Image (tube, rainbow, N blue to C red):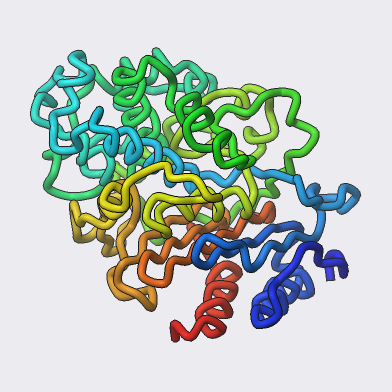
Length: 378
């Protein structure tokens, strides 16, 4: 076992979930991790254990946070859903209504819903960029506004791994006059008392767990990559998990993938969607506004992920993988995962620091299976 001391709590009937979490550490599948679940808005499991560093010298504590890569997209989507629920954003409107420069190169009919569902044809940048460019909001958004789509928008999804956060974030910025990370912090994280950050203050660096890169032979793609996949994966070049340990990465706003938090903050924030707009006793949104996340936007073989997928507004929508139909979810490169079940009014979140080479893996799925068995969903 990496560390025999699993901290936190699991209500009595959720003991099998604690056992599954402990097993991940016993087998060294995990180095350090956190897992949290809510039911009807109440936190029923909140666990953490292991080490925050690769050498095993820094214990994972209650307030340890970690970069969760694309689980960040769920927070970006929630922020956009919140702005839309207030009547300030129309997902069916052209992006150019809010961001006039975006209409360039034939993108005048691209809708905000296309950005939310990875179907805008902007899965990467045509111009070569550097890792440092990701920290320059004005540059990367201007490049996206100027370029032509890689495919006809609205006809297929192609996972916008890095670009989605800038695209949705710029729409939010144009509407509110504030960056997406600021809106998220002021309107969601702070009111809920949640420890999740899109743009982390330097004062919090000591709490951040180091992501441990997967074996160099691991890849999220199978077989030879297409030109689109190469562009998405290799522009910028040399973008590896060690970048997440730098102040430049942590302090920037990269709303597709540089969110820093833990399972507790993820589950307790996204309980907003699972519980009809209410979390921690506070109403942030209407129930109708929450359920918009379920609205299917595009379905088929994703051009980047190369698997069948159904995207709603900002999330993958259940297409038979989950026990209940009204479920949305997404994972992050390396293994982090969040599942929001609007039928069972539950959220499950997992945030590790030892990365696998794929989006999601059996560590998270085993924890989800244990939860579903306990709650009778299976």
